[in-house]
Image (cartoon, rainbow, N blue to C red; front, top):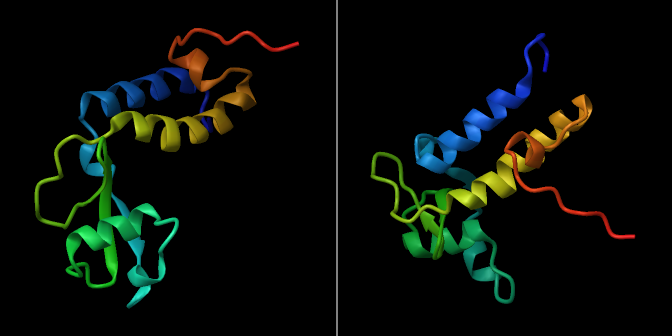
Length: 123
């Protein structure tokens, strides 16, 4: 965006790498959690709290987790990442919003950059 190069190939490449699993190490969410905060959530339990509960209090106040097909899973440092990472979650919830904010400034969208079918507008 800040050079004279087209950002579309870069965005397309990052999406391909992400879907292929080449960027799995970059997908770990890191959130701070206060002592006793995991017990406060009853109705709606945020992903970082779900991961902290699964880790069994071994987080030390910082929760590292990834989103898998089965929901959030703890991803402690120095250990292999859990299996079944939901890479589409990261494409749709992390990459798409950032890419759209940039690409809209040059008159395109994330969907167009990836060659996704265009949705017809409602009248």
